[in-house]
Length: 265
Image (tube, rainbow, N blue to C red):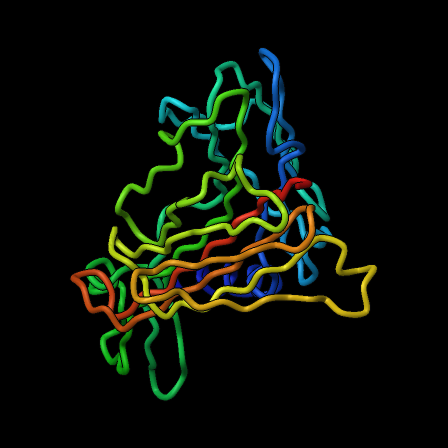
């Protein structure tokens, strides 16, 4: 009963956030110098980079150029956006990621009433009411990404791990320039994710009559190609779902956003 109550509270408090797009926005994408600092904004919003709802920074982490992961040194959660700061003490490429471990939700009915508990298939067995029917468990995971490079770029932090829904940076993020093609590859459990629709948007939507969003679809190798016309900051949004049955779930859903910067030619 306690888990049912917690699930209900979680549903009510999360609906407004889940209806928005999660993103992280670093103060800089390419830096030079030694012992520099980075500040990161975290928010969930309907309009690209217009902060709307503060998101907990508890799952925010930074992966250093050597592959080591650290929580941010300082963080604050606000009403419209959250913020965090960290010192970048080494040359190379850093991955900023906001997103926790996968969540499992088991849906079921009791006397025609739909209910949910936050548990995977195995854990749910001991929690389900005796007369539960129409039982389905979903695995869900979302994350927001950004990449920052200090002096010399490298790839240790941004190399795919072969776990969950990931992006492979075919073109290094430090090399994104207007009018030049950018390539990414989407992966699921290390394998190409074909047929995934992606939406790309650019900062400044609030000041344009035409949002000028672009929709792409990954090819058979999971690859995407985009040639930006303008310099500036962009957001890539991708989501994936499949009826993949495992010991813990009956289906899976995953989403990611990537904030990136395009330089002047």
